[in-house]
Amino acid sequence: MSYMIGIDPARVYTEADALSGKCPALGTIGTLQDGRVYVMCKVSAGNVTNGHLVTIDRSHNIASCTNTSNPLTAANRLGVALSHTTTLTASTSQLIWVQLFGPCVVLASLSALPNIVLYPGSVTGAVDDAGSGNSSASSYIGGLILNSTSSLASTLCNAILNYPRFVLVQA
Image (cartoon, rainbow, N blue to C red; front, side, top):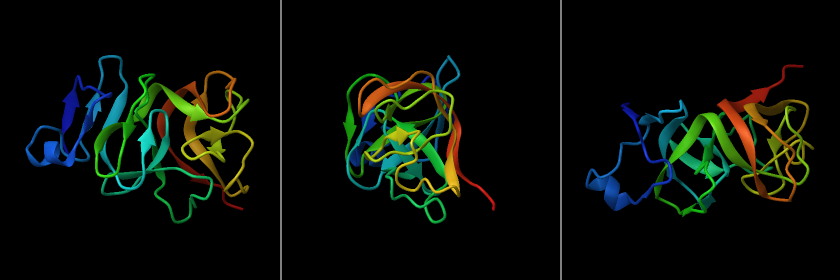
């Protein structure tokens, strides 16, 4: 694994870029001068748009988190894909920077509140405080909080990341 300072988190790379050495290797950690931390990942299924909450597996493949993601069997590491306000989409097999730490924007359900426990939302890639989907009392998202109430359904909302993951609650 390598480490880079001064990356372009809005850049989407193709497999051809990776094969020709024009992008960092999967798993490379990158930081910006403001302290935000990212990891280079590959989209494994479907399209990922800016602000999507994604699961990250041990090979650094990502997929949008859904309300059916099972924290007992899914990758426990989470991140926010394309976590900026520029509208971008990454498709299957493309490589992108996924944010792990620092201020970001994340897709949130309508009226999700700040500073409380979050769960995967009913919209793919979104978070929600209402606990739809896999929100049994046995799990929640740790390391991710909203800074403000989301005002529209499926809108980007300011948030803080601190290496997000599924947290299992022991009974």
